[in-house]
Image (cartoon, rainbow, N blue to C red; front, side):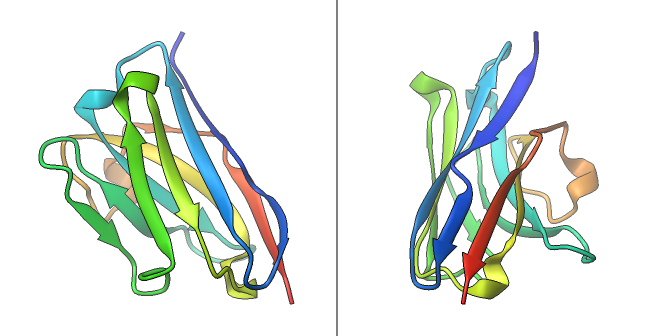
Length: 123
């Protein structure tokens, strides 16, 4: 049974924080890069962060750089996205996705996707 489940979303005020989790079951997470994407209503899915499997290198989109932090705990088969200083423009459905080793810019390259978790930031 292969599953990838996001959790930790919710409603917060501008300036608040949330910690998203991406829990994998049915397969080992340690061989995959973990990407985080978001999709706001009516807009294209956007890559916002990624952590590689090979060297642990990280990527952040300019829109979240300095505010978000990506990490992973392979022993728990879980990835995390810490989101601080949230803004109303961060409102979106957030998805985690997996790709072997690398951190592709294209969502087409990712092999597994979670169901998404809603993040809403009020003004």
